[in-house]
Image (cartoon, rainbow, N blue to C red; front, side, top):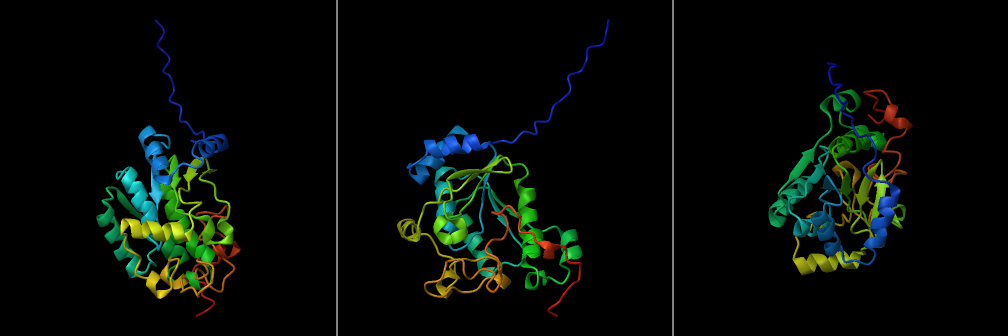
Amino acid sequence: MAEAVRRLDVIDTAPAFMQADADALNARFEGVETLTMLRALFAEGTLGRVAVVSSFGTESAVLLDLVARADRSIPVIFVDTLKMFPETLAYRETLIARLGIENADVVTPNEDTLRAKDETGLRWSYDPDGCCAIRKVEPLARAKAWLDAWISGRKAFQSVTRQNIPRFEVEDGRLKLNPLGDWVKADLDAYFEERNLPRHPREAKGFLSVGCAPCTSPVAPGEDPRAGRWRGWDKTECGIHTDSGGTSQASDLPPGYEPFL
């Protein structure tokens, strides 16, 4: 009797979501209140394996509170670049405890990569794109490897590079959800007050957007909320929300290259 032929396992490498899926979700949830939308998505399992990516910055408490109200078990990923303000790390602990977040993850840069490409820790001073690539973009890519979808806190009003943000979009085969894309500053302030949420300690000092300590400065009245990020550089994003991935030709500078020393 012939031996039965074993059926080979097939690894599904197809994208979890297509643009048509994002279009359908945008149509379905058009005009639907944010918390109602999140509760429906989580209850139905529409997003598959999903997590929130949070910088624990000046506006992060709003999205984190909404997600926690919908489902506290949703993972929250924080990329610690090892260049963060101490206040940000403390604020993260405050929000986790205050909101009852049950699954808080931290990812950090690869140690071997740091030794090879940023041994002195000063790459931010001459190659901010390269610094973001190894300290933020690559660690987040590792964290997102198991996800079907991820939730971002981007908002259209934050800068000209973030205008016309849809609620749902597809990026590298994953669904990207921007629940606060159409919120304005007044909406955020009202929510902070309504929910009595703590503010990031740096906000009172003029830091309307907070990233890594070396590349973040206060914002003057009337300036774009993200004007204090990478001030003096032709750079507005860290790379996790752009096609370039935060890289540039300068990212390939040789290890130990320190032109400003």
